[in-house]
Image (cartoon, rainbow, N blue to C red):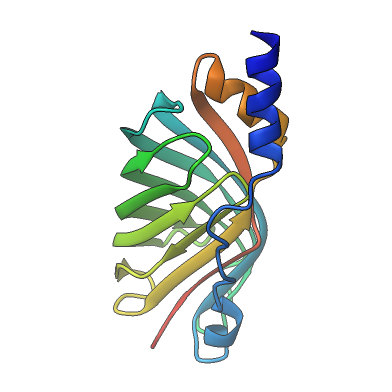
Length: 178
């Protein structure tokens, strides 16, 4: 068992899966609407992600950090909720073809993004696209972040009970006009 655990930890820490390119929310921010930095999101999978490929219910929630919006200057932050059905396997990437993202802004407004693409691995996540309604309706949305849960902890979870939870930063999230 110890050898299996060490192998899983080594696999998780040495992994360089599908490099995820940086989303360019900053370049889009010059066009409009809102850009956020510095938040934290906790992802949860049910059932836990294991070494066998499976479909899981993925949910996430957290804080978008500090936000700026020339169109809506009262927006300075927001909370986010993500729901998706995902194909997942330790330590492979997680892919959800259609995620629903709901953002509650600090000014009381909301943004809902239906059909956003989500992908991630043990190091990064990217969220992009979808149909935006509510605040910033008709625009685009994208975000990216880095996993902050230690990779050794992720590897150990993959071989014991399954990976049921991990945390990531929100390096950048943006929504706005195209």
